[in-house]
Length: 262
Image (cartoon, rainbow, N blue to C red):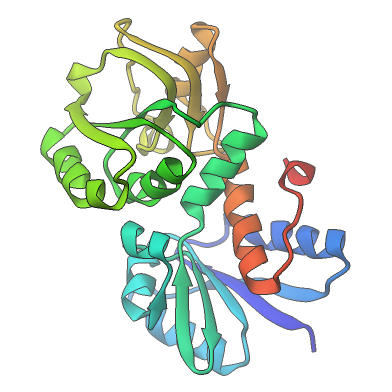
């Protein structure tokens, strides 16, 4: 019987995780079975338990269960503790381990583009869970300054207060979307604007060299504006691949070559 892995979420049909993990395994000469699991909105814990009771080895977690997964873990990595969300689960000696590979996936995708992160000044638009999950890995990658901009500035300010102690070498600050200005090396869109179809207007007073959209597979007003400015830009497919590479490495102890799958 092949080793069993899965991704759990609701909805789940759109997930590309099975194709990625099967492609990674094939490239490394490994055999595994990786499936999609649809869990009822009120049935995550039961579905997760059934998977591991049936000798499942590793489980990826997607929307809307990452916070529930975090709450269920016996052992958490540092980046999972800071993100307060888990997207990668595995068991050791009956204990449930959790990690969050999203932020490292973003960092690795940006590095694969050869965009600089060391001593960089970064603007992240949005102050939700996606932003919380990437601050620590970006700081670890050498960012000097990270500004979090959000429609509700109080939420961004709270995020800065929560995370600044964990990233002592990086200066965090907050502002409202109406205060966007200044020069940045990189701007990251962590809002759901591209998924909801809402326009995200970047003021002329905001200058930047690189633009990264966390979402993928949808038209993005954020990327359109970057293109009009002649700025190097990318959607979030590389982040998707990067977080999957990181999860695969945790489970199998071997790391697929990220650039091979971009």
